[in-house]
Amino acid sequence: MKMLPLMANTQEFGAVVIGYDDVARRKLQALLRAEARVTVAASQPLCDELRALVAKHHIQEVSVEQALSQQEQFPLVILVEGEPAQLKAQAMRLKAQGRLVNVATYPEWSNVSLPYLIDRHPVMIAVGSTGEAPVLARIMKARLDALIPRSFGRLAHLVHLGSERVKALFPTLKQRERFWSQQLEGAAGELMLSGREEQSEQLLSNNLATAESQVNPLSAVVGEVYLVGGGPGDPELLTLRAVRLIQQADVVLYDRLVAPEIVDLCRPDAERIYVGKARSDHAVPQGDINQLLVELALQGKRVLRLKGGDPFIFGRGGEEIETLSQNRVPFQVVPGITAASGCAAYAGIPLTHRDHAQSVRFVTGHLKDGSTNLPWSELAMPAQTLVFYMGLVGLPEITRQLIAHGRSADTPAALIQQGTTRNQKNYIATLGTLAEHIADKAVEPPSLIIVGEVVSLHDTLNWFDPEQAGGSQGFWQRKH
Ligand code: SAH
Image (cartoon, rainbow, N blue to C red; front, side):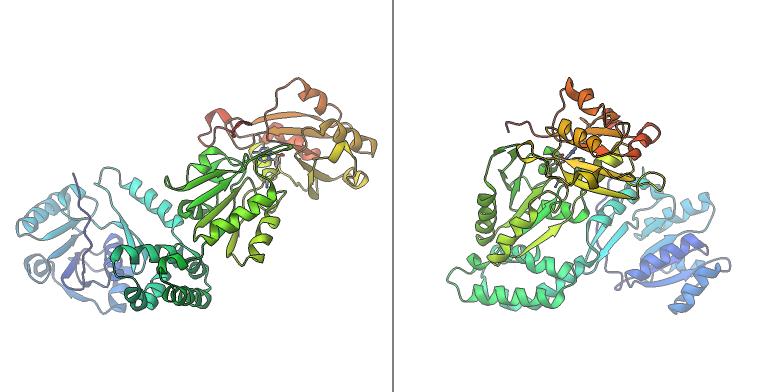
Protein backbone atom coordinates (compact mmCIF):
# COMPACT_ATOMS: atom_id res chain seq x y z
CA MET A 1 0.00 0.00 0.00
CA LYS A 2 1.38 3.39 -0.97
CA MET A 3 0.37 6.63 0.70
CA LEU A 4 0.38 10.29 -0.20
CA PRO A 5 0.59 12.55 2.85
CA LEU A 6 -1.85 15.44 2.66
CA MET A 7 -2.52 18.09 5.27
CA ALA A 8 -6.23 18.60 5.75
CA ASN A 9 -7.87 21.76 7.01
CA THR A 10 -10.44 19.98 9.14
CA GLN A 11 -12.12 23.18 10.21
CA GLU A 12 -13.66 23.29 6.78
CA PHE A 13 -15.23 19.89 6.67
CA GLY A 14 -16.87 17.74 9.26
CA ALA A 15 -15.50 14.62 10.86
CA VAL A 16 -17.32 12.03 12.92
CA VAL A 17 -15.85 9.53 15.34
CA ILE A 18 -17.95 6.39 15.75
CA GLY A 19 -17.04 4.68 19.00
CA TYR A 20 -17.37 4.81 22.76
CA ASP A 21 -14.07 3.57 24.20
CA ASP A 22 -10.60 4.91 24.88
CA VAL A 23 -9.48 4.42 21.29
CA ALA A 24 -12.34 6.66 20.21
CA ARG A 25 -11.21 9.19 22.80
CA ARG A 26 -7.68 9.24 21.39
CA LYS A 27 -8.96 9.73 17.84
CA LEU A 28 -11.23 12.51 19.05
CA GLN A 29 -8.35 14.16 20.84
CA ALA A 30 -6.18 14.11 17.72
CA LEU A 31 -8.97 15.78 15.74
CA LEU A 32 -9.55 18.35 18.47
CA ARG A 33 -5.89 19.25 18.47
CA ALA A 34 -6.31 20.17 14.81
CA GLU A 35 -9.40 22.18 15.80
CA ALA A 36 -11.50 19.96 13.59
CA ARG A 37 -15.26 20.33 13.34
CA VAL A 38 -15.99 16.98 14.95
CA THR A 39 -19.06 15.01 16.05
CA VAL A 40 -19.30 11.79 18.05
CA ALA A 41 -21.61 8.80 17.49
CA ALA A 42 -21.85 5.61 19.55
CA SER A 43 -24.18 2.67 19.99
CA GLN A 44 -23.27 2.32 23.68
CA PRO A 45 -22.73 4.74 26.56
CA LEU A 46 -19.42 6.60 26.21
CA CYS A 47 -16.59 5.64 28.56
CA ASP A 48 -15.93 8.17 31.33
CA GLU A 49 -12.92 9.83 29.75
CA LEU A 50 -14.61 10.18 26.37
CA ARG A 51 -17.76 11.55 28.01
CA ALA A 52 -15.69 14.12 29.89
CA LEU A 53 -13.93 15.21 26.70
CA VAL A 54 -17.25 15.51 24.82
CA ALA A 55 -18.69 17.61 27.63
CA LYS A 56 -15.64 19.82 27.92
CA HIS A 57 -15.60 20.72 24.23
CA HIS A 58 -19.41 20.83 23.83
CA ILE A 59 -19.21 18.21 21.12
CA GLN A 60 -22.38 17.29 19.31
CA GLU A 61 -23.56 13.66 19.43
CA VAL A 62 -25.56 11.93 16.71
CA SER A 63 -26.75 8.35 16.20
CA VAL A 64 -24.53 5.86 14.40
CA GLU A 65 -27.09 5.71 11.57
CA GLN A 66 -26.93 9.46 11.08
CA ALA A 67 -23.14 9.41 11.15
CA LEU A 68 -23.03 6.75 8.48
CA SER A 69 -25.69 8.17 6.24
CA GLN A 70 -25.02 11.93 6.36
CA GLN A 71 -22.52 11.99 3.58
CA GLU A 72 -22.23 15.75 3.14
CA GLN A 73 -22.05 16.55 6.80
CA PHE A 74 -19.39 14.00 7.64
CA PRO A 75 -17.00 13.49 4.76
CA LEU A 76 -14.38 12.10 7.20
CA VAL A 77 -15.44 9.06 9.23
CA ILE A 78 -13.35 7.49 11.99
CA LEU A 79 -14.72 4.00 12.63
CA VAL A 80 -13.78 2.57 16.00
CA GLU A 81 -16.62 0.40 17.34
CA GLY A 82 -17.97 -2.80 15.86
CA GLU A 83 -17.11 -6.39 15.00
CA PRO A 84 -14.49 -6.79 12.28
CA ALA A 85 -16.97 -8.07 9.68
CA GLN A 86 -19.30 -5.17 10.34
CA LEU A 87 -16.48 -2.62 10.31
CA LYS A 88 -15.27 -3.93 6.99
CA ALA A 89 -18.72 -3.76 5.42
CA GLN A 90 -19.28 -0.23 6.73
CA ALA A 91 -15.88 0.91 5.51
CA MET A 92 -16.56 -0.46 2.01
CA ARG A 93 -19.91 1.28 1.84
CA LEU A 94 -18.50 4.60 3.05
CA LYS A 95 -15.60 4.46 0.61
CA ALA A 96 -18.00 3.69 -2.23
CA GLN A 97 -19.71 6.96 -1.34
CA GLY A 98 -16.38 8.73 -1.86
CA ARG A 99 -15.82 9.42 1.83
CA LEU A 100 -12.56 9.43 3.75
CA VAL A 101 -12.53 6.49 6.14
CA ASN A 102 -10.17 5.55 8.91
CA VAL A 103 -10.83 2.22 10.61
CA ALA A 104 -9.02 1.94 13.93
CA THR A 105 -6.53 -0.97 13.96
CA TYR A 106 -7.48 -1.99 10.37
CA PRO A 107 -5.40 0.17 8.05
CA GLU A 108 -6.15 -2.25 5.21
CA TRP A 109 -9.80 -1.17 5.14
CA SER A 110 -9.03 2.53 5.55
CA ASN A 111 -8.31 5.03 2.82
CA VAL A 112 -6.82 7.57 5.23
CA SER A 113 -4.81 7.29 8.42
CA LEU A 114 -4.10 9.68 11.27
CA PRO A 115 -0.32 10.08 11.45
CA TYR A 116 1.76 10.75 14.54
CA LEU A 117 2.22 14.46 14.82
CA ILE A 118 5.23 16.53 15.85
CA ASP A 119 3.61 19.86 16.35
CA ARG A 120 5.78 22.97 16.34
CA HIS A 121 3.04 25.35 15.39
CA PRO A 122 2.96 26.82 12.75
CA VAL A 123 5.10 23.99 11.38
CA MET A 124 4.45 20.33 11.88
CA ILE A 125 5.72 16.94 10.86
CA ALA A 126 3.36 14.04 10.33
CA VAL A 127 4.83 10.56 10.58
CA GLY A 128 2.70 7.85 9.06
CA SER A 129 3.18 4.32 7.88
CA THR A 130 1.61 2.02 5.36
CA GLY A 131 0.32 0.00 8.27
CA GLU A 132 2.81 -2.85 8.00
CA ALA A 133 4.88 -1.85 11.01
CA PRO A 134 3.19 1.07 12.78
CA VAL A 135 5.60 0.70 15.70
CA LEU A 136 8.36 2.02 13.43
CA ALA A 137 6.36 5.18 12.87
CA ARG A 138 6.11 5.66 16.61
CA ILE A 139 9.86 5.19 17.06
CA MET A 140 10.65 7.53 14.17
CA LYS A 141 8.30 10.11 15.63
CA ALA A 142 10.01 9.91 19.01
CA ARG A 143 13.44 10.35 17.42
CA LEU A 144 12.46 13.34 15.33
CA ASP A 145 10.57 14.83 18.22
CA ALA A 146 13.70 14.78 20.35
CA LEU A 147 15.76 16.43 17.61
CA ILE A 148 13.58 19.45 16.98
CA PRO A 149 13.57 21.98 19.79
CA ARG A 150 10.17 22.56 21.43
CA SER A 151 10.60 26.24 20.75
CA PHE A 152 11.12 25.75 17.00
CA GLY A 153 7.75 27.30 16.16
CA ARG A 154 8.81 30.53 17.85
CA LEU A 155 11.03 31.23 14.85
CA ALA A 156 7.81 32.17 13.11
CA HIS A 157 7.75 35.36 15.25
CA LEU A 158 10.91 36.47 13.52
CA VAL A 159 9.55 35.78 10.05
CA HIS A 160 6.40 37.63 10.92
CA LEU A 161 8.34 40.54 12.35
CA GLY A 162 10.70 40.98 9.41
CA SER A 163 8.69 39.86 6.44
CA GLU A 164 7.75 43.33 5.11
CA ARG A 165 11.26 44.71 5.38
CA VAL A 166 12.76 41.57 3.85
CA LYS A 167 10.37 41.75 0.91
CA ALA A 168 11.30 45.37 0.31
CA LEU A 169 14.99 44.58 0.52
CA PHE A 170 15.25 41.45 -1.61
CA PRO A 171 13.36 41.33 -4.89
CA THR A 172 13.65 37.58 -5.54
CA LEU A 173 12.34 34.64 -3.56
CA LYS A 174 15.75 33.01 -3.70
CA GLN A 175 17.45 35.98 -2.06
CA ARG A 176 14.78 36.13 0.59
CA GLU A 177 15.23 32.46 1.34
CA ARG A 178 18.99 32.90 1.64
CA PHE A 179 18.55 35.80 4.03
CA TRP A 180 16.02 33.95 6.14
CA SER A 181 18.14 30.85 6.29
CA GLN A 182 21.07 32.95 7.53
CA GLN A 183 18.90 34.54 10.19
CA LEU A 184 16.84 31.57 11.34
CA GLU A 185 19.75 29.13 11.35
CA GLY A 186 22.12 31.81 12.58
CA ALA A 187 22.54 33.87 15.72
CA ALA A 188 19.08 35.46 15.66
CA GLY A 189 17.40 32.06 15.40
CA GLU A 190 19.63 30.59 18.10
CA LEU A 191 18.71 33.41 20.48
CA MET A 192 15.02 32.80 19.84
CA LEU A 193 15.35 29.04 20.35
CA SER A 194 17.14 29.52 23.64
CA GLY A 195 14.39 31.80 24.92
CA ARG A 196 16.12 35.17 24.52
CA GLU A 197 13.27 36.54 22.49
CA GLU A 198 13.92 40.27 22.81
CA GLN A 199 17.60 39.95 21.98
CA SER A 200 16.71 37.81 19.00
CA GLU A 201 14.25 40.34 17.64
CA GLN A 202 16.72 43.13 18.25
CA LEU A 203 19.45 41.29 16.38
CA LEU A 204 17.18 40.64 13.40
CA SER A 205 16.22 44.27 13.35
CA ASN A 206 19.89 45.35 13.51
CA ASN A 207 20.82 42.92 10.76
CA LEU A 208 18.04 44.29 8.60
CA ALA A 209 19.14 47.84 9.26
CA THR A 210 22.71 46.99 8.30
CA ALA A 211 21.53 45.21 5.17
CA GLU A 212 19.34 48.18 4.26
CA SER A 213 22.33 50.47 4.38
CA GLN A 214 24.46 48.34 2.05
CA VAL A 215 24.74 48.22 -1.69
CA ASN A 216 24.84 44.44 -1.46
CA PRO A 217 22.48 43.66 1.43
CA LEU A 218 23.37 39.97 1.60
CA SER A 219 26.99 40.75 2.49
CA ALA A 220 25.96 42.42 5.75
CA VAL A 221 25.31 39.26 7.70
CA VAL A 222 27.74 38.40 10.50
CA GLY A 223 28.25 34.73 11.19
CA GLU A 224 28.59 32.88 14.44
CA VAL A 225 30.93 30.36 16.01
CA TYR A 226 29.71 27.18 17.68
CA LEU A 227 32.29 25.75 20.05
CA VAL A 228 30.98 22.22 20.31
CA GLY A 229 32.11 19.28 22.41
CA GLY A 230 32.13 16.22 20.18
CA GLY A 231 32.38 13.76 23.07
CA PRO A 232 34.88 10.94 23.38
CA GLY A 233 34.18 9.14 20.11
CA ASP A 234 30.86 7.33 19.91
CA PRO A 235 28.64 9.66 17.81
CA GLU A 236 25.59 8.63 19.83
CA LEU A 237 27.06 10.44 22.80
CA LEU A 238 26.60 13.82 21.09
CA THR A 239 24.05 16.16 22.60
CA LEU A 240 20.97 17.06 20.58
CA ARG A 241 22.17 20.64 20.35
CA ALA A 242 25.57 19.50 19.08
CA VAL A 243 23.93 17.48 16.29
CA ARG A 244 21.74 20.41 15.28
CA LEU A 245 24.64 22.85 15.11
CA ILE A 246 26.87 20.34 13.33
CA GLN A 247 24.22 19.99 10.68
CA GLN A 248 23.72 23.66 10.09
CA ALA A 249 27.37 24.82 10.02
CA ASP A 250 28.85 26.18 6.77
CA VAL A 251 32.41 25.38 7.77
CA VAL A 252 33.92 23.05 10.36
CA LEU A 253 37.31 23.15 12.07
CA TYR A 254 38.11 19.86 13.76
CA ASP A 255 41.10 18.08 15.20
CA ARG A 256 42.45 14.63 15.73
CA LEU A 257 40.32 13.86 18.76
CA VAL A 258 37.03 14.08 16.90
CA ALA A 259 35.91 10.74 15.52
CA PRO A 260 35.55 10.76 11.70
CA GLU A 261 31.93 9.58 12.00
CA ILE A 262 31.13 12.81 13.83
CA VAL A 263 32.70 15.02 11.16
CA ASP A 264 30.63 13.03 8.66
CA LEU A 265 27.47 14.41 10.24
CA CYS A 266 28.30 17.80 8.72
CA ARG A 267 26.40 18.90 5.63
CA PRO A 268 28.04 17.47 2.49
CA ASP A 269 28.62 20.99 1.19
CA ALA A 270 30.19 22.24 4.43
CA GLU A 271 33.85 23.19 4.17
CA ARG A 272 36.08 20.98 6.37
CA ILE A 273 39.32 22.29 7.83
CA TYR A 274 41.61 19.95 9.74
CA VAL A 275 43.53 21.79 12.45
CA GLY A 276 44.60 18.66 14.29
CA LYS A 277 47.41 18.30 16.67
CA ALA A 278 49.45 15.28 17.44
CA ARG A 279 51.57 15.51 20.57
CA SER A 280 54.20 18.23 20.03
CA ASP A 281 53.25 18.42 16.35
CA HIS A 282 50.97 21.40 16.09
CA ALA A 283 49.35 21.21 12.68
CA VAL A 284 47.92 24.72 12.96
CA PRO A 285 49.22 26.93 15.80
CA GLN A 286 46.57 27.85 18.36
CA GLY A 287 46.82 31.57 17.57
CA ASP A 288 46.08 30.88 13.91
CA ILE A 289 43.06 28.78 14.80
CA ASN A 290 41.71 31.59 16.96
CA GLN A 291 42.23 34.07 14.13
CA LEU A 292 40.71 31.77 11.51
CA LEU A 293 37.54 31.41 13.57
CA VAL A 294 37.17 35.19 13.66
CA GLU A 295 37.80 35.61 9.94
CA LEU A 296 35.36 32.93 8.87
CA ALA A 297 32.62 34.29 11.12
CA LEU A 298 33.16 37.81 9.80
CA GLN A 299 32.59 36.44 6.30
CA GLY A 300 29.07 35.64 7.48
CA LYS A 301 29.67 31.93 7.94
CA ARG A 302 28.30 29.67 10.62
CA VAL A 303 31.53 28.23 11.92
CA LEU A 304 31.67 24.99 13.84
CA ARG A 305 34.69 24.51 16.08
CA LEU A 306 34.42 20.84 16.90
CA LYS A 307 36.52 19.54 19.78
CA GLY A 308 36.95 16.12 21.30
CA GLY A 309 35.25 15.56 24.65
CA ASP A 310 34.25 18.74 26.38
CA PRO A 311 35.65 22.01 25.02
CA PHE A 312 36.34 23.38 28.50
CA ILE A 313 38.24 20.37 29.82
CA PHE A 314 41.87 20.43 28.65
CA GLY A 315 40.48 21.73 25.39
CA ARG A 316 41.78 25.31 25.15
CA GLY A 317 38.20 26.22 24.35
CA GLY A 318 38.48 29.22 26.64
CA GLU A 319 41.30 30.78 24.63
CA GLU A 320 39.42 30.41 21.38
CA ILE A 321 36.33 32.17 22.57
CA GLU A 322 38.32 34.92 24.25
CA THR A 323 39.53 35.98 20.80
CA LEU A 324 35.96 35.79 19.51
CA SER A 325 34.69 37.95 22.29
CA GLN A 326 37.44 40.54 21.69
CA ASN A 327 36.33 40.70 18.05
CA ARG A 328 32.64 40.82 18.95
CA VAL A 329 31.87 37.64 17.08
CA PRO A 330 28.77 35.93 18.49
CA PHE A 331 29.43 32.42 19.78
CA GLN A 332 27.95 29.67 21.85
CA VAL A 333 29.49 26.76 23.70
CA VAL A 334 28.02 23.28 23.76
CA PRO A 335 29.40 20.95 26.41
CA GLY A 336 30.37 17.42 25.49
CA ILE A 337 30.96 14.21 27.35
CA THR A 338 34.54 14.40 28.50
CA ALA A 339 36.92 11.47 27.98
CA ALA A 340 36.88 10.68 31.72
CA SER A 341 33.11 10.16 31.74
CA GLY A 342 33.04 8.36 28.43
CA CYS A 343 35.95 5.99 29.12
CA ALA A 344 34.84 5.30 32.68
CA ALA A 345 31.28 4.49 31.63
CA TYR A 346 32.37 2.28 28.73
CA ALA A 347 34.90 0.47 30.93
CA GLY A 348 32.45 -0.17 33.77
CA ILE A 349 34.44 1.97 36.21
CA PRO A 350 32.27 4.36 38.24
CA LEU A 351 34.45 7.39 38.94
CA THR A 352 33.05 7.82 42.43
CA HIS A 353 31.61 5.18 44.74
CA ARG A 354 30.44 5.42 48.33
CA ASP A 355 32.82 2.65 49.42
CA HIS A 356 35.87 3.65 47.40
CA ALA A 357 36.12 7.25 46.29
CA GLN A 358 34.49 10.43 47.58
CA SER A 359 36.04 12.63 44.94
CA VAL A 360 37.51 12.50 41.49
CA ARG A 361 40.24 14.66 39.97
CA PHE A 362 40.94 15.31 36.31
CA VAL A 363 44.68 15.85 35.93
CA THR A 364 46.85 16.63 32.94
CA GLY A 365 49.63 14.10 32.61
CA HIS A 366 51.42 16.14 30.00
CA LEU A 367 54.51 16.78 32.08
CA LYS A 368 56.66 19.52 30.65
CA ASP A 369 60.19 18.10 30.13
CA GLY A 370 59.32 15.20 32.42
CA SER A 371 59.13 17.69 35.28
CA THR A 372 57.21 16.87 38.41
CA ASN A 373 55.29 20.01 39.21
CA LEU A 374 52.02 18.26 40.01
CA PRO A 375 50.84 18.36 43.66
CA TRP A 376 51.87 14.74 44.20
CA SER A 377 51.17 14.54 47.94
CA GLU A 378 47.58 15.69 47.35
CA LEU A 379 47.17 13.30 44.46
CA ALA A 380 48.49 10.43 46.56
CA MET A 381 45.76 10.86 49.19
CA PRO A 382 43.42 7.86 49.53
CA ALA A 383 39.69 7.64 48.73
CA GLN A 384 39.91 9.65 45.54
CA THR A 385 39.93 8.68 41.89
CA LEU A 386 42.52 10.24 39.61
CA VAL A 387 42.01 10.55 35.89
CA PHE A 388 45.06 11.48 33.85
CA TYR A 389 44.52 13.01 30.43
CA MET A 390 47.50 13.03 28.05
CA GLY A 391 49.33 10.71 30.41
CA LEU A 392 50.69 7.91 28.22
CA VAL A 393 54.20 9.26 27.81
CA GLY A 394 54.46 10.30 31.44
CA LEU A 395 52.94 7.07 32.80
CA PRO A 396 56.11 5.62 34.39
CA GLU A 397 56.83 8.96 36.07
CA ILE A 398 53.23 9.41 37.22
CA THR A 399 52.98 5.98 38.84
CA ARG A 400 56.43 6.31 40.40
CA GLN A 401 55.62 9.68 41.96
CA LEU A 402 52.25 8.55 43.32
CA ILE A 403 53.83 5.55 45.00
CA ALA A 404 56.74 7.64 46.28
CA HIS A 405 54.24 10.05 47.85
CA GLY A 406 52.37 7.31 49.66
CA ARG A 407 49.67 5.89 47.40
CA SER A 408 49.80 2.11 47.68
CA ALA A 409 51.42 0.26 44.80
CA ASP A 410 48.46 -2.15 44.94
CA THR A 411 45.98 0.58 44.03
CA PRO A 412 44.08 -0.62 40.96
CA ALA A 413 44.89 1.37 37.82
CA ALA A 414 43.63 1.23 34.25
CA LEU A 415 44.62 2.56 30.89
CA ILE A 416 41.74 2.95 28.45
CA GLN A 417 42.64 3.21 24.79
CA GLN A 418 40.26 4.99 22.38
CA GLY A 419 37.36 4.82 24.81
CA THR A 420 33.77 4.48 23.48
CA THR A 421 34.94 3.40 20.02
CA ARG A 422 35.22 0.00 18.37
CA ASN A 423 38.94 0.28 19.07
CA GLN A 424 38.53 0.54 22.82
CA LYS A 425 40.92 -1.54 24.89
CA ASN A 426 41.05 -1.69 28.66
CA TYR A 427 44.39 -2.47 30.28
CA ILE A 428 43.81 -3.21 33.95
CA ALA A 429 46.68 -3.50 36.42
CA THR A 430 47.88 -1.71 39.57
CA LEU A 431 49.80 1.46 40.18
CA GLY A 432 52.87 -0.67 40.64
CA THR A 433 52.46 -2.72 37.45
CA LEU A 434 50.56 -0.61 34.88
CA ALA A 435 53.55 1.01 33.21
CA GLU A 436 55.25 -2.34 32.74
CA HIS A 437 51.99 -4.04 31.75
CA ILE A 438 51.50 -1.78 28.76
CA ALA A 439 55.17 -1.34 27.86
CA ASP A 440 55.09 -4.05 25.18
CA LYS A 441 51.57 -3.23 23.94
CA ALA A 442 51.13 -0.97 20.96
CA VAL A 443 48.73 1.44 22.67
CA GLU A 444 47.00 3.65 20.11
CA PRO A 445 46.21 7.23 21.14
CA PRO A 446 44.19 8.71 22.62
CA SER A 447 44.31 6.95 25.95
CA LEU A 448 43.33 7.79 29.49
CA ILE A 449 44.63 6.59 32.85
CA ILE A 450 42.32 5.96 35.79
CA VAL A 451 43.79 5.34 39.22
CA GLY A 452 41.82 4.32 42.30
CA GLU A 453 39.98 1.51 44.07
CA VAL A 454 36.97 2.06 41.76
CA VAL A 455 38.97 0.40 38.97
CA SER A 456 38.42 -2.94 40.74
CA LEU A 457 34.70 -2.68 39.86
CA HIS A 458 35.59 -3.14 36.20
CA ASP A 459 35.60 -6.94 36.68
CA THR A 460 31.92 -7.06 37.51
CA LEU A 461 30.57 -3.96 35.76
CA ASN A 462 32.23 -4.18 32.37
CA TRP A 463 29.39 -4.22 29.84
CA PHE A 464 30.70 -2.66 26.64
CA ASP A 465 31.75 -4.96 23.85
CA PRO A 466 33.71 -2.90 21.30
CA GLU A 467 33.37 -5.59 18.65
CA GLN A 468 29.59 -5.31 18.75
CA ALA A 469 29.57 -1.52 18.91
CA GLY A 470 28.02 0.30 16.00
CA GLY A 471 29.45 3.73 16.77
CA SER A 472 32.89 4.91 15.82
CA GLN A 473 35.72 2.95 14.21
CA GLY A 474 38.35 4.89 16.10
CA PHE A 475 40.35 8.02 15.44
CA TRP A 476 42.19 9.78 12.66
CA GLN A 477 45.62 8.39 11.98
CA ARG A 478 48.52 10.54 13.05
CA LYS A 479 49.11 11.60 9.47
CA HIS A 480 45.74 12.88 8.45
N1 SAH B 1 38.61 18.06 25.79
C1 SAH B 1 38.93 16.65 25.84
C2 SAH B 1 40.32 16.38 26.32
C3 SAH B 1 41.39 16.92 25.44
S1 SAH B 1 42.99 16.48 26.04
C4 SAH B 1 37.88 15.95 26.72
O1 SAH B 1 37.11 16.62 27.42
O2 SAH B 1 37.85 14.73 26.70
C5 SAH B 1 43.34 15.06 25.09
C6 SAH B 1 43.38 13.83 25.96
O3 SAH B 1 42.06 13.39 26.24
C7 SAH B 1 44.03 12.63 25.29
O4 SAH B 1 45.42 12.71 25.39
C8 SAH B 1 43.48 11.51 26.11
O5 SAH B 1 44.14 11.39 27.33
C9 SAH B 1 42.09 11.98 26.40
N2 SAH B 1 41.07 11.38 25.49
C10 SAH B 1 40.28 12.04 24.65
N3 SAH B 1 39.44 11.18 24.04
C11 SAH B 1 39.73 9.96 24.50
C12 SAH B 1 39.22 8.64 24.26
N4 SAH B 1 38.23 8.44 23.40
N5 SAH B 1 39.76 7.62 24.92
C13 SAH B 1 40.77 7.82 25.78
N6 SAH B 1 41.28 9.02 26.08
C14 SAH B 1 40.77 10.07 25.43
